[in-house]
Length: 92
Figure 1: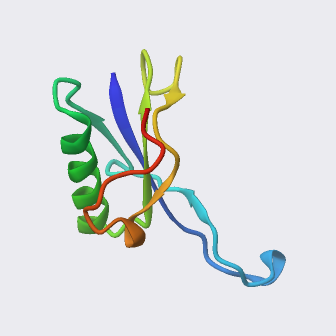
Figure 2 (figure 1 turned 30 degrees about the horizontal axis):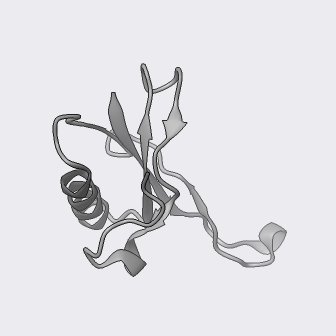
Figure 3 (figure 1 turned 60 degrees about the horizontal axis):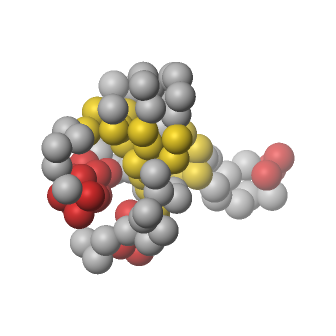
């Protein structure tokens, strides 16, 4: 099963020197199960559109038996603001 995990920015505060960093998003829209019959570019396009629509800052394509078991990262964490529908980097 292929699925996409989405990320958001953590709130900068005193303990992290007011720097922003990405954390895994939570909620029903933070994980999307993908159709494995689709091509990689089609999945990438869908993930990028979903991230922009729901105001996520990044995403990562993963594969596993279930969402919690046997998970393997297919891509690095991809920042949505730098993609602009150009495709992913580090795709096998």
